[in-house]
Image (cartoon, rainbow, N blue to C red; front, side, top):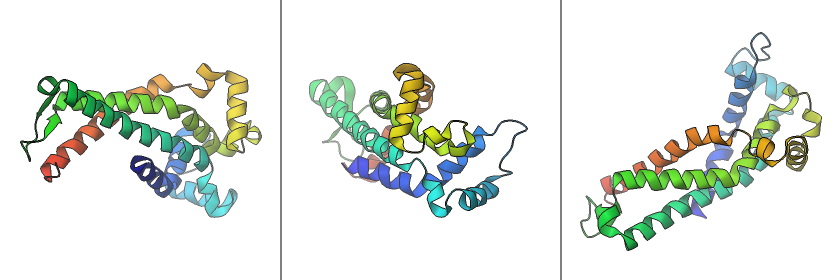
Amino acid sequence: MAGSMAGMTAVICTYPLDMVRVRLAFQVKGEHTYTGIIHAFKTIYAKEGGFLGFYRGLMPTILGMAPYAGVSFFTFGTLKSVGLSHAPTLLGRPSSDNPNVLVLKTHINLLCGGVAGAIAQTISYPFDVTRRRMQLGAVLPEFEKCLTMRETMKYVYGQHGIRKGLYRGLSLNYIRCIPSQAVAFTTYELMKQFFHLN
């Protein structure tokens, strides 16, 4: 629950930046709607409903973030506790801040973080596809069929199915997500030792 709430709070605070990033990244050579970040912010605000225009696609993001963050933290915690209880000498070592507490070895931490990220990404990925399509909004020719989260998911599923629609690009996302989560969880565990929190 804590992981889910943390993830959702972060998403709500940074969502307008992600919206502008997606719009700028989608621009095709020679067909630039936006001249830069500031222009993108001004244009979206003026032409897409003011402040609410920056939050188009927020609902699938929130619905995807809750299971992503929750499953990610839960999976990592479970792998850590199971590993340390079943193979403490193989997978663990004494914590640098408290020798009475076992922590995962760094390479095992990286592995558990990567696995946690992969599982969480797989579960929440259809929401990510929906969010991106909704964020692009009027840039896409079929945007009128993708105004709500339900319409968007139904359209993507109807046109492309599960594998080539709702999970399109998942393998590329693993390339970013797995190392990112591996490093994030490992850093988290190392910082707990650094600040003597074990």
